[in-house]
Image (cartoon, rainbow, N blue to C red):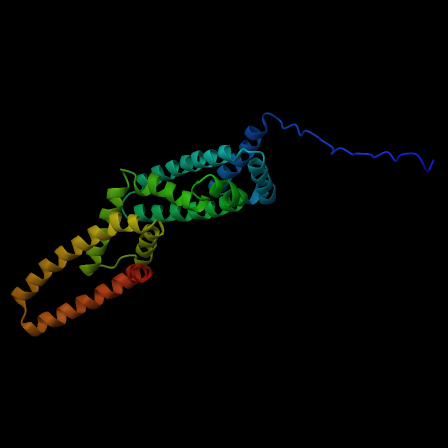
Amino acid sequence: MSGQKKKNFQIEAFKHKVVVDPNYADKTWKILEHAIHEIYNHNASGLSFEELYRNAYNMVLHKCGEKLYSGLVSTMTLHLQTMSKSIEAAQGPLFLDELNTKWNEHNKALQMIRDILMYMDRTFIPSHNKTPVHELGLNLWRDNIIHSSKIQPRLLNTILDLIFSERSGEVINRGLMRNIIKMLMDLGSSVYQEDFEKQFLDVSADFYRAESQEFIECSDCGDYLIKAERRLNEEIERVTLFGHKERNQNH
């Protein structure tokens, strides 16, 4: 027995081929798509975010990240187009109210969607040079809402009209105005500058050029300086309240 040659045993690795349901991607995306609809429709309380996270995680794991990402873009765009129509339909002073309300709703939905798609955000998106979920949501809001041909000029004119009214002594909703200006800032400096700041500065220059000429014609030097100082203080307060000062400190 001792002289017998020992036999070497080699254990091969157990190979098990995982069979994935050919309809897996479609079925799983349908679950996530439904959840996104529910979130935008204010029905998120009945959703299991742990289960949704797991579904999104598995889609990325099974190489279905592209389907998940493109589906997200399409679904968010659909809801933003619906929001756009609601904002467009708002009349008079309700226009900015509706815009602010929908903006808040979109941000709330975006945060929940981002939580569900956290794994995609951390892995698939950077490795495929995609726009992160939060930034994507802001870009889609910009393209479908702020740059809508029926909203963009109306938004600018409404803001400028309100500022003119306040300069003329009327009381406006400053809290709402600040929210709208902050929204433009949140969308990026280029949006803020192109959609508001340039026109705001031009209109302001025209307003004070005309008013200073009027002051000169009907006031003596002392009164003119008093009025000019009062206007300067008003503008400092206005730009501070509306966030211009904060923006300038950040750039």
